[in-house]
Image 1 (cartoon, rainbow, N blue to C red):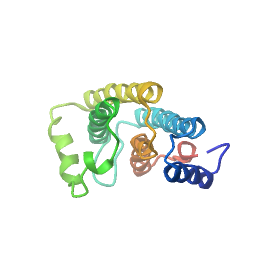
Image 2 (tube, rainbow, N blue to C red):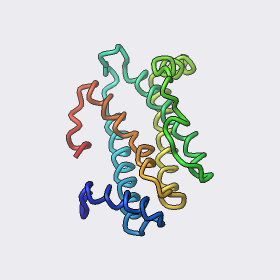
Image 3 (cartoon, helix red, strand yellow):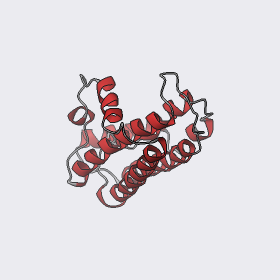
Image 4 (cartoon, rainbow, N blue to C red):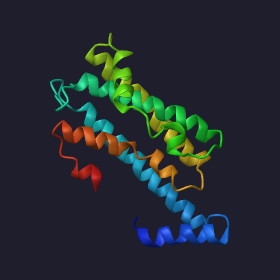
Length: 177
C-alpha cells in the first residue's frame, strides 16, 4: 500500500469491527485500490502467458495448451463466484472451495472436458474467458464492491498465474513488484 502501511490498514479494519461502525471511505478506497492493482496484475500475467512459446513445458508435463485449459477452468470458477458477489453475498473461500476439495481431480476435469481442443483453440478459450473475468472484476470494483477484506482474495488470481509462469521459466519480478 502506498500511503498507508499494512499494519495501519489492519488496525483500522479491526477498529471498525470493535466500534461496529461502517467502514470509512478511506478504508473502502484502499480496499478498492488494492483490488484494482490486483486486476492490473492479472492483465499483466495474461499478457505474459499469451507470449509464452508454443513449446513451453512445465515440470508436471503440461504444455501451453494444458496450462491454458487449467487457467481457463479456474477463471470459469471465479466467474461463478462473481455472480454471488454481484448478488451481494459475502465472499468466503470455503463456501465456494471446500477445504477437502481434491485439486488434482478438479484440474484433471478442466483438461478432460476440453480434450478435443487444439492448442490454439485452448489458448483462445483462455483469452476469451480471461477477458470476461477481468471485465467482471472491473465491474464489481466499480459497482458491487463489498466492505470485506476477504474479497481481496477474490482478486488474487494473478498470484496463481505467477506460480505457473515461474514453472514455465518466466522471470516474474516485474509482475510481483
